[in-house]
Length: 143
Image 1 (cartoon, one colour):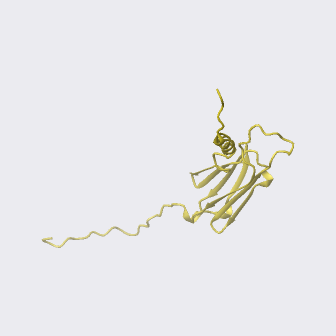
Image 2 (cartoon, rainbow, N blue to C red):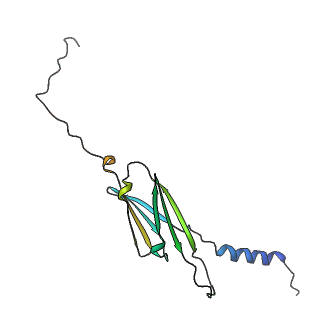
Image 3 (cartoon, rainbow, N blue to C red):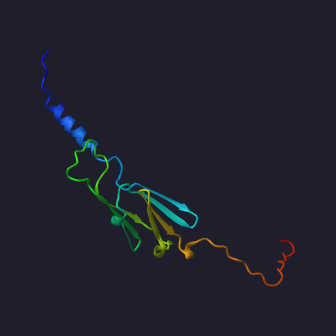
């Protein structure tokens, strides 16, 4: 039986291999939730050198940048699924947050940002002052 030449078989194989190397998820997956009087953002950054993490707040935009360096040039890849290079992520922050009190920590490949709610934006109870005795409203006759 003779093998027939299929020019698209090689193209299909090349595309399949190329698409396998494209990450299926963003370079900085994020979880964001509220816990008490703060918002917490957890950003997955495995393999990132903490000294490359840069966090800026300008007006109401928080920008996170980090870099995962490429392995040495003498490496022969068998599978290369983790993206390398510089990653950036921006969050638009609403009003009512204490931007001057944001805290950041990095442990076990996870960057944790704690963004407190500003004091003036927190719900509060307002006391009603009471002076004197309540007055009784009389209804007119026939009403």
